Image (cartoon, rainbow over all chains, first blue to last red; front, side, top):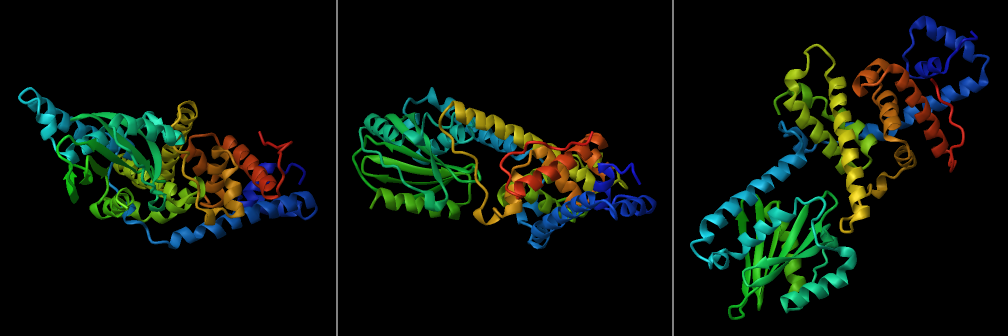
Length: 248
Length: 164
């Protein structure tokens, strides 16, 4: 057979020839060492692929896949959810703001932290003002604006790397938000709020603000709130580390 | 999940996604997005046609969109400081062949895996990826050659034999 094409060789390797053609190809291969070598190589590639990935077939299927629901895609849905949370807060804010200029002050720390989370955590392009690669500058800048030394917890052992931070308007002037992200793109934020009332401490508290879980506490002149769109137990694991690092 | 028929395909979708995407987290994200999309469009699937091939078509579209998004994100990262680089594969997965697959262009990797791993016919691959059979064959040929050179440690690929 002189008209053996490369396509024939591929199809032979992949078992996609009819019997007649296969016999022809085999006859050709008997006296074409180069073609035979390629056939062996490609066959070995196929077998190697199955050998290393077949194990996946026997893994238990993650629950999130079995429980998949119709969706236009996770990202838009996530952004939409965060947007709705933000909008709900925003409307609440507007409807009260004209009645009391002290509303913002009355709005509790975890709520303010959750709003800030809902606004910035979905940001793709501008999640932070100053990135983690300028951490020294970030710390100096935010500490100066807050008038208090800002500490940046290290959460790499919990799987979260610092993305960066930003300055926020808070009830008494400047506030700060530090953002972290894990390998899955899941984000958490640490909201730092300046208190004007007499310094006092409060223990660790939890608040569920819509989709956003928040652990918060007050340490002297600063209030802290760790926010994330995750279950309470997972966030608690991180929050307790943050708490310990800030209150050694 | 509405359809037990779709559930039955999850293990094989996961196998393909793992080989395609590299790390298991990203692969399962790909499978989840595919399932969610498939359930929205399930009424479009014609009973009697190959459900698995149809799911591969959806996964291909999701995968391409993710690649685009990641490229755009990567560009943003390069231009404006701030975000972390995308997650790396787990070290234990960086076996030779798995690592070599990452060196293939996505379009060659898809064809190589659909044929070699998933054992789809060339016609099914052509349909799943919306490309002519001739293109399937040329990508398969280039993919196999590229895999060979990468596996044999050749740093540069000077002459690739392509099939028209």
